[in-house]
Image 1 (spheres, one colour):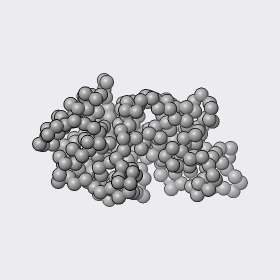
Image 2: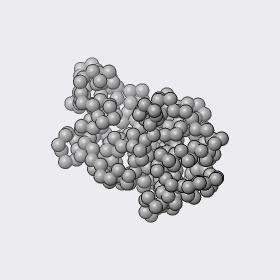
Image 3: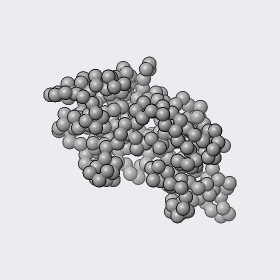
Image 4: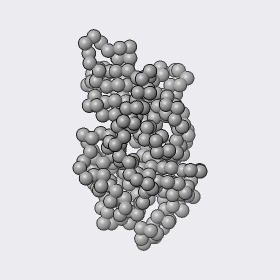
Length: 289
């Protein structure tokens, strides 16, 4: 892979935890194994959820774990004008929507694989009289149309096919609170930064179809994708801040790294330092790649 550019894009809503470290490790190793760049981007577009000081703490933890990034750290809150300009380019493919989440959930609509309701298309043909626009959505092809199915080769999972109509419906680009939606921001950011390879957790697999669809609408190249298994807690739930995931102990970096390597099934042997760990982990990842 020539001119490889990868990235790790945490949301600064709290400290890094074991699940986010697995995603960070996979993206870091893939970039280093291919002699590429590894960027760090703070996905803080949801300002209401951003925790004060979290971005700084995340960067300090990455350094303590021996993970050095290339270039400057980009924050989404500094790129709002870029999102607005890109949204304007999509004017013919978007429409205003007055629906609340409750209205959609109560409509007995289909449910996507990730458990979220599939938008039933209430406002596709215009807002009801007197109803204000709350969100802006991008129109996706109807089920059965040729461009409804988005297929791609995932470097971990193999061939993946997703139906935009059945797995998402017309999805939000601008939220009711005025913030730009994740799906738009991540596509714009990856293109602006020249990202060639997206390595992240499989919990974001369902978003990939939507992001490839936006890339096609905008004429952007599609990166290569690799989705690693997510870390779960004792009850089988995805490990996250919402399910009580604890922050990493940066005072025990080697222990944290070894646990993450185990989740990725990397064979690193009996290493005694962080530097030794990364040499062994990179060699193990390279053999797998």
